[in-house]
Amino acid sequence: MPAGQLRIAMVSAHSCPVGKLGAKDTGGMSVYIRELAHELGKQGHLVDVYTRAHDPRDNQIYK
Image 1: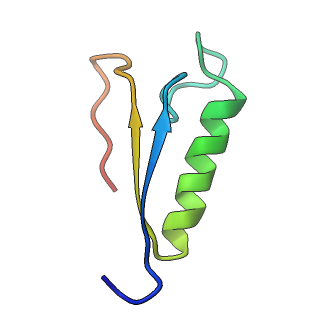
Image 2 (image 1 turned 90 degrees about the vertical axis):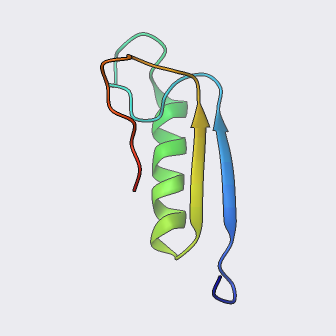
Image 3 (image 1 turned 90 degrees about the horizontal axis):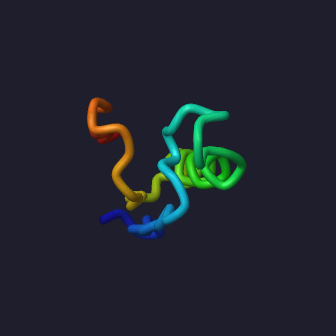
């Protein structure tokens, strides 16, 4: 791991950060976690977001 790079684990217990906005249980906290994880990743950190299961028809997301 390069110097200064962090491994960060985030927990989204309320809802899935990639859920459709306006859907049940999806709102501001989901957007906040998704955007924070994205920005930390752009800075070179490794970010894992753990969340509850959402729609089983959705694919798992790995970036």
